[in-house]
Image 1 (tube, rainbow, N blue to C red):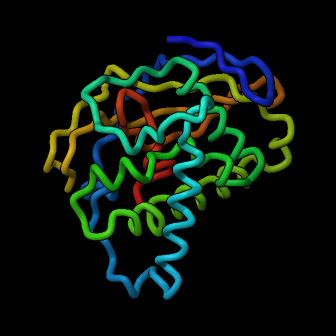
Image 2 (cartoon, rainbow, N blue to C red):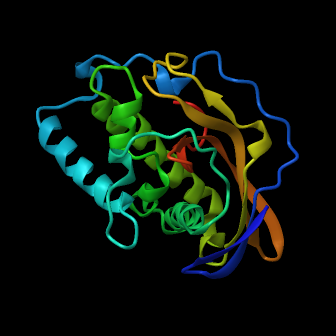
Length: 221
């Protein structure tokens, strides 16, 4: 499936075709791994920083018309499709974050904090979202930028390949979740360097209200 993606780098084509086999599910899905004890990752300023990152994430999640943060709305059973302006904008933001080596630019592509708080049946999901998932997302973006090396300035986003035919609905209580969502493994971001296509994997996307969001970028942490 193809759609036109306009980002700061120009007009690019987005496709949802994928022929690769789905990787086996990890023995333990890190998106629902037990939350580490507070001493492992929290500090005295956690309350203040959690509020700050909540505000930043909510602001980044807002649609261009300044509407309501979708993470605060109820979940739906709508199956996402890898097309349309919101999807294109999230992929563009992820790519921009990798090229610029700036994870903050890609936060709109990440599963919203308010939605994660609704989904997860774990103690302090906001802390887990920030200290584990978003922290891993940032490290992965830095690593992908480093992999681009000197090609970062000239690399161009080509398309995202989401194997939507292998997406499945995850029922409540399957992954320490209170609410269900669609999940798909094995998305690829394809880019061009010197007229040669290369790619990197996005390990896992999950849905919120019929839209795909990154929850694990490189591997499961």
